[in-house]
Image (tube, rainbow, N blue to C red; front, side):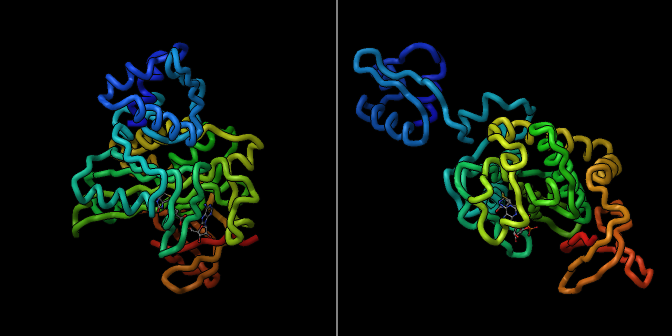
Length: 323
Ligand code: BT5
């Protein structure tokens, strides 16, 4: 109902909408309307109330609720259905559940905070409320499961481009799923797939981007390794505008991936990752290897040249850059 009240108030932003008319349109009592307006105010909506004239929306907070996000979306199909939660365990887990129940490609899950935000390998994604972006997109690409990691590369390119367009800063992608600004992690991606041997049923594309989190708010665990757009730009960013840009980039890069095949995505990834020739230490399935990153191959695996000259293909793991 909050959404409907806001919709009515937005229809005529400069004038008052009487409590009587709102209650008739929504078929609820005037007391209910007043209670809802009070609740919206606690969320940060500046709503003027006058006993004679009714209600008027003065200013909206930067929330990611559908009625704030939908009007600014320029995508064709992505994000047209938004599942919004003020707080949730994990947007990826919710999107997975929805996809199992038949949610369509392009439906998205957004939360203002996550209690159990997921990183890879059971790690935690720090997700405090109302500051950042926690997004999961349901995709149903008709590709074999071996190509699933290319979706991660595609999403990393889209996320890096959204960051660059929104901030003017130049991010760097770190294999396989980090986006860095000045060597610190500003965004992380977690893709989960549901598939059979030769067919993907769906991919959940999970993206966390630190937007307006101040340095002092970072948990101790990540203070030295993480950053946010606000920290790097020195000013806050509109979260809904960023979400709009990110969804546009994702829609575009996903189309490029499906229409042109992986090569264009891999080339774009290479341009934004500059991994070639980097000295790295890789941890993969409990083993640690050092060497020089040679490239990524057509399936998105990292090719490592070890110190004894062997070339090894790494399909999953963590990379640390060495000087
Ligand atoms: C990732 O894992 O980077 C994937 C993160 C994906 C998060 C999104 S949010 C929306 C969606 N729903 C979810 O539940 N998850 C996805 P990984 O490469 O394993 O990195 C995790 C590590 O990054 C942690 O162990 C910390 O060291 C660090 N970290 C945790 N929170 C962070 C944050 N907010 N910013 C930067 N680094 C963080």
